[in-house]
Length: 112
Length: 112
Image (cartoon, rainbow over all chains, first blue to last red; front, side):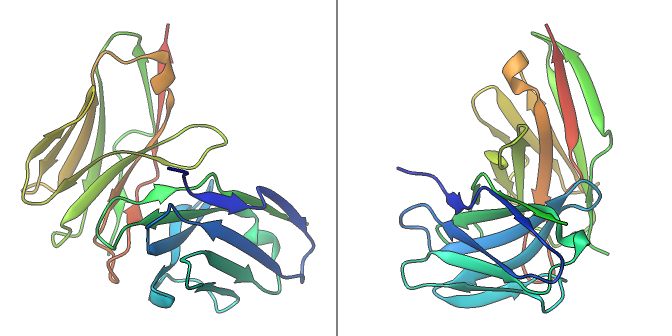
């Protein structure tokens, strides 16, 4: 069974631009969560989607948004990029909430 | 507030020795805990989980111990190998919205 995939793996953007990251969960998994990982803050929860609905949201500004499609694939969008948005963005999927989450390799976003 | 912390940021062990990585959590209502391993350039990899109705759970070469009285979690790795070198995170599903809260991580180095 294929694991969680994320595209692109690396991305360089300029301040003020927007970016869209994509995540394909493990087949059959309906819950997708997004995390931001930085050296200073560690792994921080962004949001969780289940059956195309956002179920939970972390403490991030409204510039961070996401969605989930009927096939459980998910995208997250960051608008008006700031230097501080440079991070590894990780997507994790699970069968349902409360079960182990499996992570993808992440998208390394660099904002210059 | 909610927090999951690790007692030591780094741990160095000799190949073949047993490793113990500790974690403290603050939310007494937390009922699900996970340990992840993250190698350089990769996403976190699920190792083992435990629910609050258990004190101990064993996997292949790994054991997780949960002490709810003192809100402490530990990961024991038996016969540590060079391939075990990575950053280990504990996570606690005790977030205000049921999301995972991650510790800062412990970097395990295995000396041959």
